[in-house]
Amino acid sequence: MNTFFLKKILTVAIALSVSTFLFSQTGPGGVGNADGSNGQPRNIIWLDASTLSFGDGVLINDWTDMSNNGNNLLQSDDLFKPTFLNNGTDNLNGHPVVRFSLDNSRLVINPFNDMPSSGITFITIFKTDETDANAIVSYASALGSMNEYRLATTNALVTTIEGNTYATSIDYSTSPIWQMLMHKWESSTGNIIINQNGDQKY
Image 1 (tube, rainbow, N blue to C red):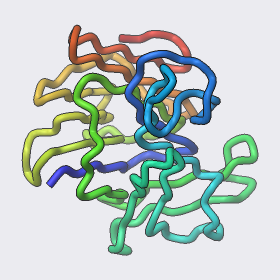
Image 2: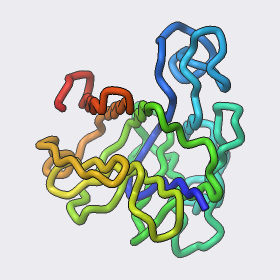
Image 3: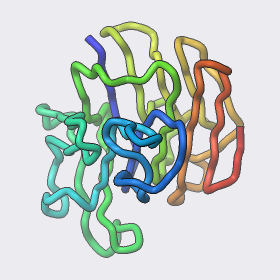
């Protein structure tokens, strides 16, 4: 079965899309839409912590996809659930966050049949001090298979695409602060672009 995992980060918002053109529409930041019509990128998953209605400190069992594609993330096991935080200490600029702090904490879509094969743009706002190769996001077409798509933090950001792993020198863990990550891959060229806080790093 195709499985999409989101795990091991403290996050405010996430978007996964097939990127083509960037004209204003109905997606995050006014970019894209659910089906990629009208020359827009198709937003496959759009997660926003401010849309969650849990109380501060509550374990999250589901996170509704805002892209209108129904790619909701779920977790039924309390041992793996992330935590919703909405308080003056943990919020980012007044916005609630989701903390993936437990060992192996993750939210899952299974089966996940919307994974694009022609290209991906993944955008997140997060911070982490992880150095043990835990994935930020991963996708596998079968249980136990190689990761078809994966971003992980070790001492630097590592990306895996179609079983091939690429190491970068982008360090997210030495000084864990809120950062914006944009990861883009195109199958036609094999190009990988990674932006950190608006600056291209890879």
